[in-house]
Image 1 (tube, rainbow, N blue to C red):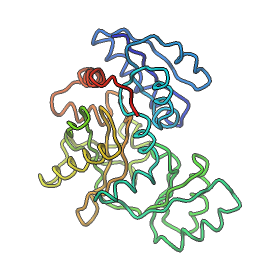
Image 2: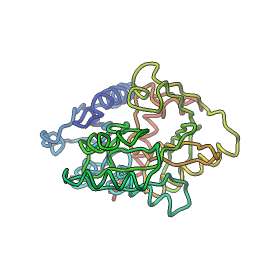
Image 3: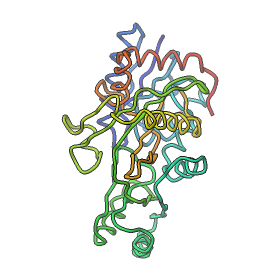
Length: 314
């Protein structure tokens, strides 16, 4: 097939996306596809409008990649693509909206509130409300951002204003939620709509206090245990919850669902990643490797699943 790979982009996750894109490009070439490489920027939209390919593989992360905007553009010009459509991408990117959907459908979520931080003069009243509603420690982060960018674990009241200001640099809405202490897990999901299944659960052991940007992307920043050493019943629940979360948001082809098992042994869902990191050493390929699927075969599987689903996505 002739496949365009969109990678790079303009979000705070650009460097990760460059690595993801290179991995995808190499795998597609190894599988015999003709590849068009595009380091995407909204300022060069003509590159997309002029594409003549069979399929688009989106290797972007964060804004203008993971939030449904590029998916909407591809829908309008009739180009099929790998992965989730506009609505599911936008919902997954909006942490507050996705948490509401999960909670309404029986999944455990951390207590949270969302605040509009578009007007700086209101930061002081927002700070007071946060301190009134939440007990230390708690988390302040942008509502729509990836890779823990702009996130602060607030351990002292004096940190609140600075955390609000930092999160507000990335988004006009911030999410405040209880800090959940426990074991970090992630579950890849793959398959055609209605026939999805979960791959082995991965436990993430970060070298820092939590799974932050450095833990995710710097060499030796975290340890991945695949499959996670948890009870069979917990493995089954995590995999079942991951597939349910994927389906509730209407995701397509693949996603990765993040959890924390709290001190009460409950799996608290954090978020669904519709375009998870896909470097050869990323979490999703690690899990696939555990069931005998190579990185190249995994990328080819995504292409095959997308080939069956060439109808326009919504």
